[in-house]
Length: 59
Image (tube, rainbow, N blue to C red):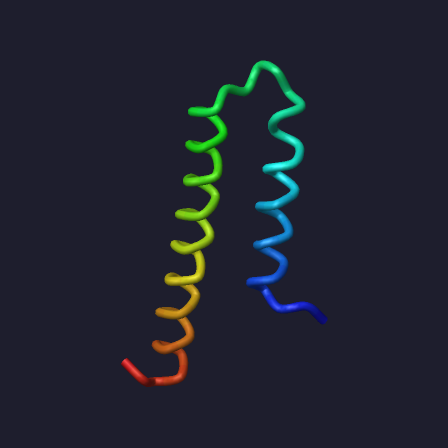
């Protein structure tokens, strides 16, 4: 089973490969989309980490 970071990397690379094909998407939109994806994944991982620590009694 591949790690989560490898899966996220593959998703981001696939987005980069697909986005230039669509002419309606400009560079600024692509950067905003990628930034939103990265921040969303980071936020979800942070929330899961806090939840796991609370559940294990480490906090």
